[in-house]
Image (cartoon, rainbow, N blue to C red):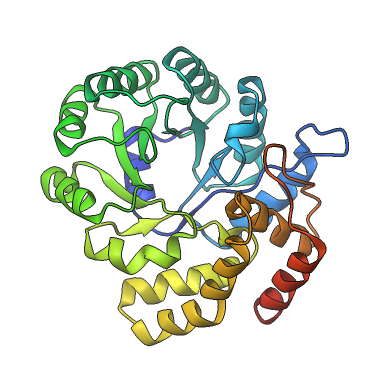
Length: 302
């Protein structure tokens, strides 16, 4: 049974969120058994919502027809945890992905930026509206790269699309985010979506964004939850210590190569013993030295 959009909106704002990695087998195809094992394990650490085939799940490397199987596997493994599916590309493809994800049992979709080109606000409005109109489940928009909404466009979309329930920001433009949260109030749930979101969580919290998606939840879920709880409780000494001891060293590994914001997460999951395989091109995996650095960093938190 899927959540209605308002129930999904509440779930998104209820706690920490995360994007499970997508495992690939030796043949390069989706490894359902490994995915079920990892998602089932993650479900025990009480994320409020899990995102199947999202950015950390290599949505950009998946064929649209692969997404329903990933969504259905996540639904089966996550027990009572709601599942949101990644969605994107051009409007017609995005509509097809959204509808197939809904049929596969997704509780909502996260609409990632469209493919390649910049677009005017009127075009972004039409693109998002067509996707929202194509499904009955809740929709979140991901504000980043070539898909940056103004507060005015987002307000129009909220009026036109009752099932638009979430706004995720990966732009880092705190001024724009604050204008949006001030303008829209509690009409939406607001999610932080910068790579390694914990590094920006304090700033986003001050801008009215109360939750975020944690990529490292994939392999250090207890630490991710500890950081989130301390952030919401205003325990700055605790969040500062975790930033210095874990997140800043992790950032140094992540920044060694483009694409490591995803590849380093998958490496961490492999180090736990989950058979999630390599990343797909155009990404590359960490080298042996970098895997060793990550293993050393993870050791106190396993």
